[in-house]
Length: 137
Image (cartoon, rainbow, N blue to C red; front, side, top):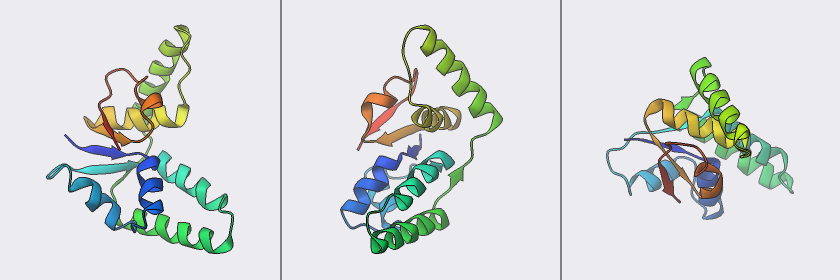
């Protein structure tokens, strides 16, 4: 079983001084032989962080981190199948009075579609997605 890496994994790694090329290796050293992937939604979240950097140097560093991450990682787009499954889960959850964070839902459904788990520090949001395996980070 593989892992879809959530943006919280990369944010924590950046704060620890790991490069984008070191981060997947660091994580996957704990899960040898397991493939990993990143959702395009995670790239959007990280791009948001570039735009919100509080200094020009931090923006440059984050932009480089994002570029390196894209070059070094398998990126999974939001497909029709992922969109439909996410819509179904969101509709069912809303009918029960549970609101899911749409970005996390799309990342979680990407993992479900691949038969992977999500590695994240955001347990609260991902635990609300039925059937999703989570690896706390």
